[in-house]
Image (cartoon, rainbow, N blue to C red; front, side, top):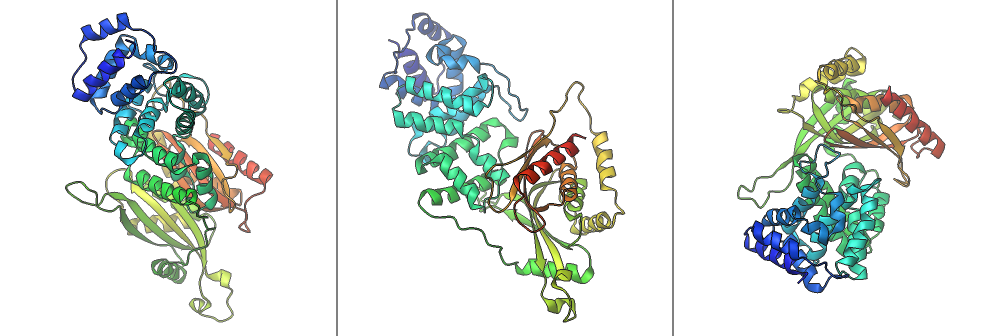
Length: 483
């Protein structure tokens, strides 16, 4: 009976009971290979095993110890006990896949095809046993495995899409401008259908929760949910509108007028929370802090603000920048130029790296000094970096700067992948200022020791950079970060 190992394993996991060593060894000794494709019962028992929650782990490991898993799924051998490349993972590749299935089993009520969610969870990182991009390799393996275990052509295609794009939602949500229609359309084109989007949303969360505490947060969850909502609207036939410059809020206008009147920076801090959860406490969970800054338009604002935030150990998540021309009456003279009243508005989302947030007055005082040149930000950050303990023999890979193709019609998207370090955003800001480009927004994503930051930049006239100029800016930025 070739289905016996799966039937026994599913029964044990469903009952929350262990499989005895004697039983597993007897089944391993007498096991016969399953036909290709698998009979329906075998596929159903595998899904039952994967959907049984936490007991699945011990049962799966019992089968794996006696070679039954690799007999059922030969591709498993390449990920068995395989270490992860990124230290943010707390499990080896094989254990991470099972942990993802456990997390996915908690989400089966959210999707219309729980069987596809569970099998995608099992296979999403299967490509890590092969060279190259594990998502690309995994797509090929997933097609083969899904067909072998008896899914039909449509389901095989869905599973392959889920494996190929299992990082798409979280990477797009944290590294791209969700207000840009090009961003939403690109995800909709890759996903293709509402059903696949629903599965991918659940898989994204299960994968992140099974990775480790640094991979998922209320902030990431809120961004992914926002992206999913926008993509679902496009898949339903709605056309995303080109974003228009939103009118400044009353608070932004107040800060801008005050900044122009005083000739210096003005800022305000405001905590952000998500709606109350369904937990017994029902308390809203913090998503970070919104930092609004208004400062008279002048060179060096972006690197100065980034440097001050780094000095105060504030982690930047997103940054939106815009220029606001104040109405003439504010200037005090009828003949004054509108450009004389130009104020930069910076809307940042930040979080305290350690402890509580600094007082707004301290941030402003340091920002004033940074803008007038009396505060040596680069030197202060270099001192802190030199004080960090260094592990011998550990050399970070060099930074890589690329221009994202078809990233946006409104701006050029420059993506920076580098080792996270104090003041990285400050150094990038200085390099972009030197290249004479304007930063419209920045989307910062840090996972473990790796930072992936995306900058939406334009030329001085506000248009995307020509291809060769964009490539030149990317090369110059990479050389700066390598230096």
